[in-house]
Image (cartoon, rainbow, N blue to C red; front, top):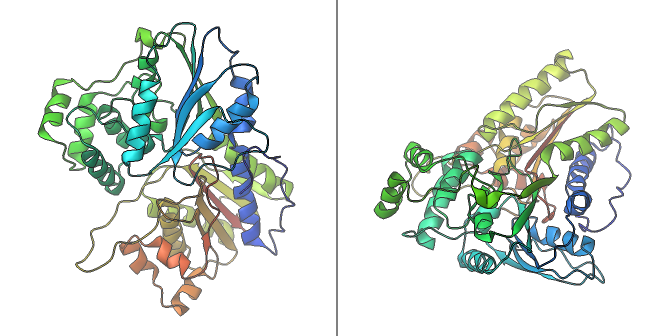
Length: 448
C-alpha cells in the first residue's frame, strides 16, 4: 500500500470491461487513500498551548496518525507522547521526519501484556497535567483491544477470555464496546477524565456505523451514556461469564463510566478526520470517472456477514437479469461493520479461518449462483480481515465452478466459518498488508 505521508495521486484506473478484478482493487485503493490521516488532520489541529503538548493514542491507524501529527505540528513547538498500534502496523518513517511521539505495538483483536503495559504508561502520562496543557488524543478502530487496562478484580487472562467470547458471539460493535468500557480503567471516557484539568482534543478515524465517538475504540476520551446494567444485560444475552466479584461490582454500579455533562469534559473537542462515508465517496468518484453509474447503499450496514452477502447477491442478480433496481453497467458500494457468529465445531474438526469480509463473500457467492456479469470485492480497510493475513476476497461469475473443480464446497466452508481456506484455494484472496488506516468494511459489486 501507499505510504500514509506520500502523494495521494492514484495510478490510472484499469478498464472495468477487460480487468474487472483490477478495477475493483482500484476502488478499494481509492477508499484507503482517502482515509489516510494526513489528509483530514490538518484542518482540526489546535494552536500549541502555553504549557505542554502531550500526545496519547491507540488504534490500528495509530502509527500513521502519529507520523501525520509530527509532520503537521510546528517544528518549534514541543510535543511528546505515546501511541499504541497493532503489531506490524507501524509505517516506515517518512524521510527526514523527526520522531517526537513514541509508538509501541500490541496484539489485536485479543489483548496481550504489551497492550496492558502500553495502557498503564499512557494513563501514567496524564499525571500532573495543568490547565495550560493540551492533550492530543489519536483514536482509531482497534483501540479497544490495544488499550487494555482491566478493572479491579479482572486479570489479563479474564479480559482475553471475555474478548474472545464477544468476538465469537455475533455481538455487534456497540454491544462489545459497552462491555469493554465497563470492565476497563481507561476506556469509556476514563482517559480524558484522568487528563483534567488539561484541555483534550481528540482526532479520530471512525470504523463504526454512525461514526459515534463513544463507540470508536470504546470511547476513551468521550463521556459514555451506557450503564453497568446495559453491560450485564449484554453479558447475559450472549452467555458470557465474568468473575463473581466483577459481576457484583457491575450490579452495584461500582464500575460506572463518566457520563455526559461531567465537568471534567468541559472544553474538550472531538474531530472526525476520516470516515467510512468519505472513503466510499472516494471510491464512487473513481467509478463515475470510468463512466459507471454508482449506487451507495449505506456506510452503516450491520448484521450477520453471510446474510448481508445474500442480500447483496439478490440485488446484483435482479440488476443483472432485469435491470432493476439498478440498470447495468453500474457499481454498488456499501460499508459498515458486519459480524460473524462462530458455529460450533464437530469433534476433531479444525476451526476455520477468516473474517467478516471473507464470510460476506462466501454468502454472496453462494447466493449469486454463478450469475453472469457480476464481480465483487469485500475487504477490511485496515488490510486485515479478522486475524488473517488478507484484507478480503474477490468473487466472480466463475467462483462456484472453479471451486467445485478444486473440490471446495461453499456450504462446507460456511459451516466451518472457513472463508480463508475457500478463497485461498482459488487464489482469490486480496492481500495488501497493513494500510495504516481503518474505516472498516468496504464492499463493491460491479454489475455488467
